[in-house]
Picture 1: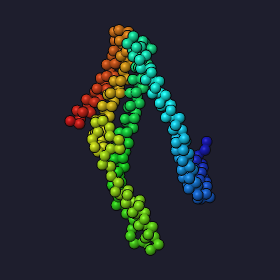
Picture 2: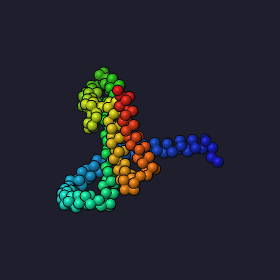
Picture 3: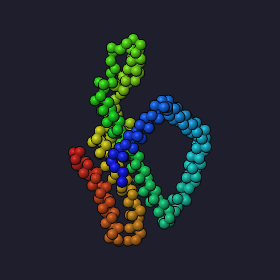
Picture 4: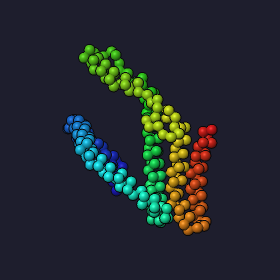
Length: 230
C-alpha cells in the first residue's frame, strides 16, 4: 500500500509540473481570454442571424395557440379527461418554473447586496499609494480613477429585479417574506393533479391527508415567516 509520504511526493510533483507548464507558456491566460471573447462573438452573431427564424417560430406558435383556444375551451367544458390532465400538468410545470426563477432572482438580489457590503468593508484597501515614481504615477491615476474608484463608488440602492413583496432595497427580511409567499403559491399549484384525482375518485383518506399535509405546509411556512417578521 502506498504511504502518505508517497501521495505527498506525487502531489508535489504534480503541482511542480503544473507550475512548470504555466511558466513555459506565460501567454496561456491571454489566449484563454481571447478564445472566450471569440466564442462570445460567435454566440452573438448566431443569435443575430437566427433571430428572423426565431421570430417567425414565435409568431407561428402564437397563431396556432390562438386557433386552438376554441377547441381547448370546448374540451374543458365537456370535461375531457386528457385535456384536464394536460392543464394540471401545466400547472405543476409552471409552479416549478416560477419557483426556480423567483428563487434565483431573489438569490441574485441578495448576492449583490452582500457583495456590495463586502466591498464597503475593504474599500480602504482599494486606494493605491500616491508616492509612486513618475512613470508609474500616470498608470496609477488611470487605474485608480477608471477602475478602483468605480468599484468604491458602486452601491446597491435597489434590487436588480424587484420581486413581489420586496421593498426598494434588498434585505434578508424582504427576501424571506417574498420567498415564503412564492413557496406557498407554487406548492398550492403543484397540488392540482392530486386534487383532480381526488375529485374524480371520490373520498380517499390517503390522498386527502397527503393534500392536507402539502397545503398545510405551504400555508404554514408563510404564516411562520410573517409571524416572525411581525
